[in-house]
Length: 134
Image 1 (cartoon, rainbow, N blue to C red):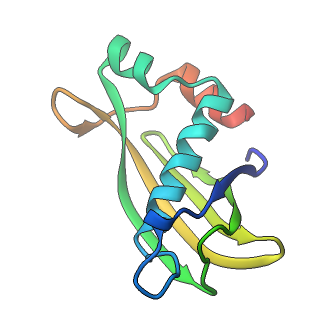
Image 2: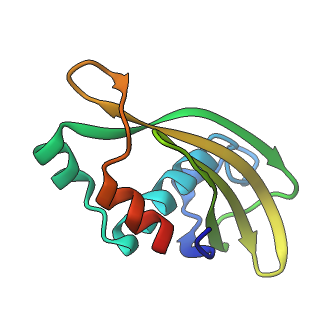
Image 3: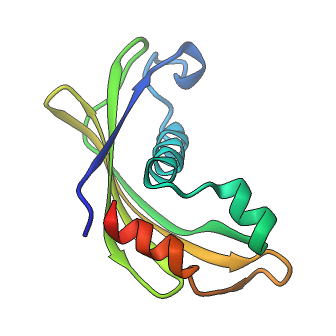
């Protein structure tokens, strides 16, 4: 499988809760952005995929574990790697790090769907090839 992809994230005020730490659900946003940037880095343009093939990626499941809090102005690294590339899905391992401290880890399964029917469809061959070679 491809190597890990790192994407930097700064924690903004809007990311925090009343206690001054990152609100737990915002890690899902950080992970989504990192997966999107990983796709860009592999040469997959989601808008082009939508326009040309009516194909999109949707999150099927997500499981997160929280290990330590992130706070306002922290500089994080969101690490993304592919655990498994299926016919119509991709299983990602993702982590949020502050330096050497693991803050959050996640397993996120993303499915490939036909937008007209919202039914699973096989990953386009060129997309799967790019994902394998990333």
